Amino acid sequence: PAPRVAPLPAAIVAARQTSGLLQHHDAITGTSFNYCTISTTECDCVDDYLARLASAFKQTDVLSGDVKASLLSGPSAADGGSLPTLLPSSQLPDAFAQLDSSNALAVAFSNPLAWARTEVVSVAVCSSKLCPGAYTVADAAGTPVPSQLVLDRFRNKTLLYLRGTAPALGVNTYFITKAAGPAAPFNAPKPLGAAFNISNGDVQITFDSAGHVTAWTDVYTGTISQITFDYLHYTERLPPPVGNIFQGGNAYTFVPDTRAPQSMLNSTGAAYITAGGPLVWQVDLPMNTP
Image (cartoon, rainbow, N blue to C red; front, side):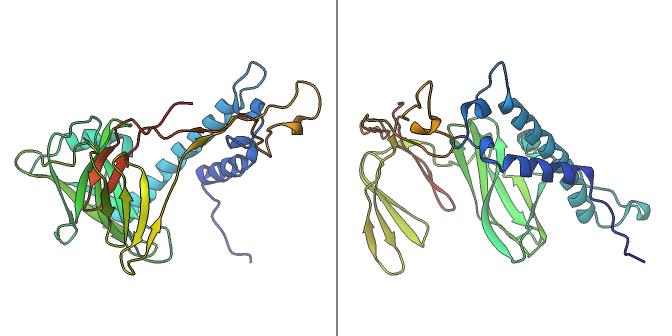
């Protein structure tokens, strides 16, 4: 007899179908016709794409949580065990707000790849610009793990970065506790005043006083590559109202018009250092609005 294969959960089937639908270029801004990415009275493809994507994500997120909870639960319910409570990322700031020095929040990192990984990962610990406290991170053996608080000025939240490892096709758990005492400084934004470097031990990036990248250095070999970069805004040439739509920009080709591109870098605005290690280095650059 043919082997019995359990049917895939409906959430996975729906997610696969949604993923296939959104692979088409009409669902990707910049490679689609306007009627596919701009809501109109005749067609609202944008809302349809977003609704399908949100539904698929919600269903698979719940399914993924159930699977991870089962893997992490240890003894079965029949043996007196219980499933741990898994929180979605949106609820983590509230959970962190309830932490004190006597309890810990367990964060599980899963690795779907077939080789072990060490990555710098982030967890949102505060949904405001001021984080009320400092945190310590440890692995399951109680060994401290390097971590760093970084302010995300644009999303108005504070992220806790940590260096996490996970075995191939496995899960690793880290425990975050609130440290006693006042909040530790976490590289509050400060405007640049002179040229400076940032380095992660492998490469070094050189910035001028305005925050523009000027050089890239290989720390191991000492090789220095000079860099000049800019962000340019081009204006698209529109096709004629009547005629060949491919005479201008379209779903397959971006055609700039005759106007010169505008530089997006603001050479007079203040750039800010918003993170300075040991795990994350971050510089916010001012940009012009086209």
